[in-house]
Length: 130
Ligand SMILES: Nc1ncnc2c1ncn2[C@@H]1O[C@H](COP(=O)(O)OP(=O)(O)O)[C@@H](O)[C@H]1O
Ligand SMILES: [Mg+2]
Image (cartoon, rainbow, N blue to C red; front, top):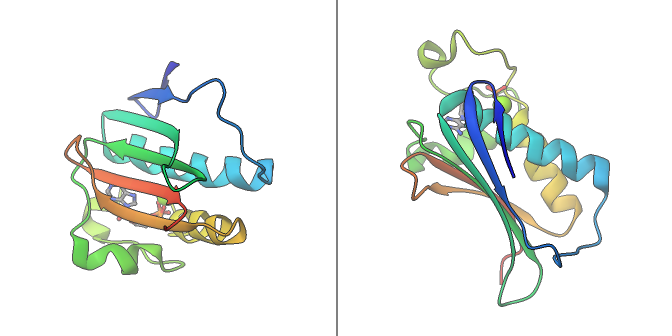
């Protein structure tokens, strides 16, 4: 599936037979927060849902934007925290997107994770640690 969001091209890849027991509205909000972030900071966004070898499902959102330095990952998750106000000044937000996404992940027995994306920007994922 391919669509545009906030000027970015978003590609979604999920196997048809991938199922998981989730709270749909909470998970939708979490994934939409991650996709909005990626679309605002990048031009190409990829959302991939897949089953992990260890069981459970991972949802990863990749972008080709500037990313976040690894040392700031934990700060980025904090509620009302926005990194680099100068870079963000034209972007609406109050700094809750990642905090909510991680809360939702934890509510599902999962974890929220930031990493370097193979696309060059940020990877934000909801996954189950092994
Ligand atoms: N995909 C991304 N690429 C680069 N920086 C990001 C990305 N997602 C989030 N950030 C940084 O992390 C901060 C916190 O994100 P978030 O909790 O969604 O708050 P908000 O989007 O409201 O600022 C953002 O202000 C931004 O600096
Ligand atoms: Mg946000």
